[in-house]
Image (cartoon, rainbow, N blue to C red; front, top):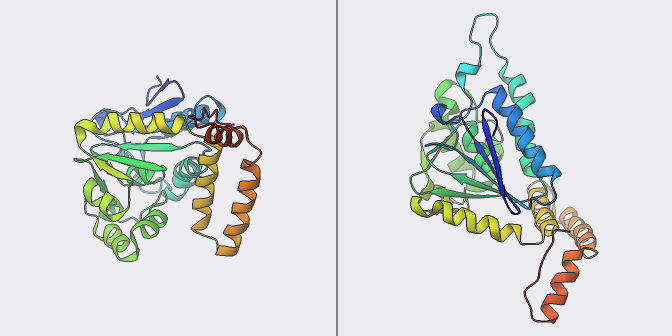
Length: 261
């Protein structure tokens, strides 16, 4: 464990937890640096085949810790630089990580914390959890991918409402709108997340990574480009160990044993 990030693993599943519970896991520069290290470990270690991202204590993440910024006249923190150096690289790494990332959300996910959750591949939230685009309440625009994730997932009208009004969205409503994968009862959240992570860790990791890449690409490309990408990905996967194992298992009527290669 570091000061602000808790990293653990169980078999092929890594658990990365934001660990500033007394501050609702709000971000500081130190936490950004330690989270980068944890994600780097997930990237480098081929035995890690699924990642759970969560927060310790009673919240997922309350966004940026304002106490870590300077508000002195003439020496105010450049928010653009802060985003460029910390939040944007974090979102990009989660989106391109060649392993599935599960966002386990409980309590509040606010500001950049809400969009950190949305950067995960599959988000499971407890029924008492909520998502809040809090930026407008302090005179800012959604960042950390918020202005991208919201309209793509819930449409322009709902995205405008969430961004402009700064009102909490319940986990149940978020699931109904398609903003997250699933809302579950609070007392079942850990079991549901663990089961999903174990399932993903036993699946063909390269195929999961390719699906992730293709779906993200589809949001900004046309059909012709997408068809070309599918051809390329399928050609690559067709030479993989897991493809051969999957086909042989199907023909032999047995359960495949994927190795993530």
